[in-house]
Length: 425
Image (cartoon, rainbow, N blue to C red; front, side, top):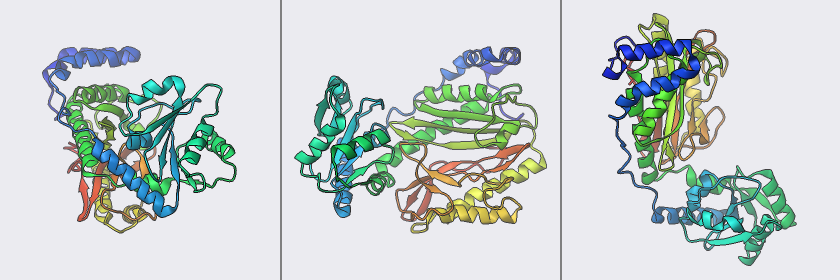
């Protein structure tokens, strides 16, 4: 990366700080960030014109969920705090031993069940018309849930549980409703959340643009002697300045890049070393996920070959993603190509040890995955990462990751993949 431009704030004083970083790793990240402050001040929030999900879209989500419930003969869906609760109700809440839950009934308005003393706070983010029922500290909250279902005459139908609901809630509901049929809510929740609307895709596009802009800023400031956490700290700072809420800013240097999520060992940037970054942020509740890999200084012939193989693998996955094909077939297409190059077979190393991609939206990883055996068929509105890395234990790894969304005409990139190891952005 010796051809990367050096900006004024990272002239000799910056290099002095890098000397400090080598001598005192615990102090280096804050020192590097202080040196970066003049450059960071030149970045501005690029999310100010984004439009949050509005009331009409939230109402349409409930209509869709209720249609799916009726088709499946389900009476209601129980959801705990998290992205699904935000998706359907707007309520932003944390999980604890004190249950707060949303009930989506097959007919009528939802219900929020929460501790009595939490009701005012819960209402602050409630974004849909809903009944709120409270429980006192000496009461069973699932008895309150059961009471709502009986009052709405839904207790005789199957009750669906969102897949992340904790066992204690499931178990208490079963005891509060003896004989009730409790089933998975995946057909309803996934049936809604897997298909993104234009408004959701627009927010994901903005999150992508924030991450790309932060990458461009960070890339020019990566220098010899830096550690992965120091590079990640720069990326996080730039992401915040650009208006994104950082989710992760991972930078893997040298041999650490051979392991998809890195190593506990400290590796420092040096000439000829691979730098693999995997970063994402959230804008108005929707995420980005982009990986870029380059070599500091001059890439070797072997590094160039593997980078080009990964770039080709990413394009093979993109070409295989067609409406009506299975998600698993995308992964299969990449592995067939990689095995002709001597990698694998399957998930064995050296090669691609993880799935080709994952769903993405409000969560960085959502159902379904581009992975062997996944039979879900691709449909317009589905969103995925495309990241068929190649990892060579003991040496290095290459990962290029961009996300795409399915349209009626096929996949469309959120971010365009890079063309060369020499120009990763």
